[in-house]
Image 1 (tube, rainbow, N blue to C red):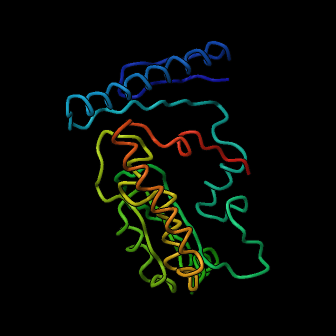
Image 2 (spheres, rainbow, N blue to C red):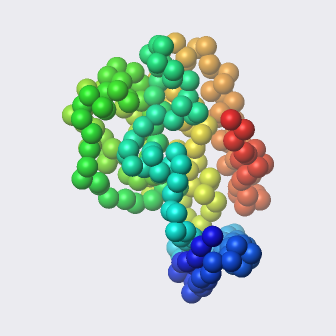
Length: 231
């Protein structure tokens, strides 16, 4: 197991090869990061701090780097995650959900692209596409405006909303959260507006509960904070 472990921007660094020592360094770095994030949140809640803090970022590098499916996916650049959907090649999808990145932030355009044949194979030419992007939505539209199905493309992205808060609250404030994306699917897949009206209302109610909870307690809802993937 390997080495360079650092808490970027906060003057800490560790290096080693013994698993136990690296595990301890990782735990210490995480404790420090959590403490500093909590301090930022307290300053915002109690003192009304509005400045942008220097968020701690933990960087861990190993000799092996990325391995397995993640390495294949990144080398490919874009692809279908079978475990995350129901596409099996036997029928056309009702909707395509795409994403790039996680927590909203600024980003720059990448010079590489894919052919129209590859693009239509992934996103279809005539089905609704809901795309969650951590950068500015207009960038995705600029990259895709000449594609066959661009008229069906709906992008959720960074709207420069949010300050010192939780990562999930950032995505809610920018309409990138899982509940908003479900609502987008219901709004754009023909026939779902009526059949899934109750589901859409539950999604809206959950977003409202989050809005109230994050302002009262400064923490995400338990179903968000404690969520795990069981697939």
